[in-house]
Image (cartoon, rainbow, N blue to C red; front, top):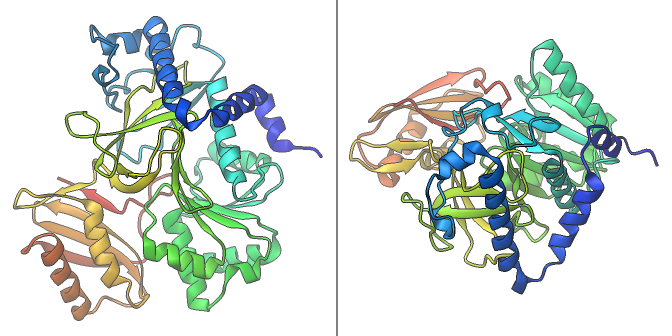
Length: 435
């Protein structure tokens, strides 16, 4: 059979056969030998960059590198220098170059060597394969943003064609547009859905209003994979009910790889084949499993560009059941820059507000989406999209919950909107502090 996806990777110079061999070899390493494997790979990549990368050498300085915990933490701010200054010797050309989405507020251009990026692709192929998805043959319904300039638009559309994706741009998700999307599910044999959480949730709410189960409309559907935004438990229940298929939560970063992917047992399994993930406290010290902290990632294979103890900008918790071979992400709490500082001096993840208000606002299905902005120490704005305006009783309930879960005397204003503004990639930032 002619495999367009495999061919497109080959044409782009990604050594997929070698990547598959390496990845499968890592899968065969026993649990008892896995710590040794990770420690050796970490040492190997650090030694490589100390020898071949001036940028990294400068960052490390005179640090004693024999102790892993002594190595500096790499932040996005460190990386905001021209790419050519960050590349390793011998990797100035024939590399994969891209830029991050900037959802953390710090976008930058990054590079991967071709072998490292081939491993990223194989990591995706392997994990999607858990759910019977084959990138060569499975048709994807894609709920994603798309560049709006002519060149960027057609480039994405061509990439979609190569990897069997049918894209629904998500900048306008009014009922008329959702109706047209539903028609496509009637006409096409989609195998899976992949897209931003908020957009897929919005589509599921539309299906709920019509009392339609998507699997009945499109029986070929196997699974829905959501990414890039938080998936709340009640949203997962809604998606499972109205899509009628398993919902898989994916967590990745374009500059790295898939970081974590829900396995068929529902565990959020961390990628320990190509990455090493640590959870650190504010002083950059490791915390015990079960404790929240900053997510810090090391790319074990990227020789073109160092991502060693790289602070990704998220806060999470590793499960107590985690092992070296099979780490599990217990919870992804949110981004480190999405923290609200309250008048009392208390710091709260912005998602706390989102959880509290969400449970009340969405009780009757009236509100489709909302976002929260902190404008002053004690003042917050909620923009929401709904059928009808929020009632005084609902607003009182929200205020009571906020007094209880956060602190009293916080001021909230509510603005009903026709639609919410998304980033240029189509992501919805659920909480923003303007302080």
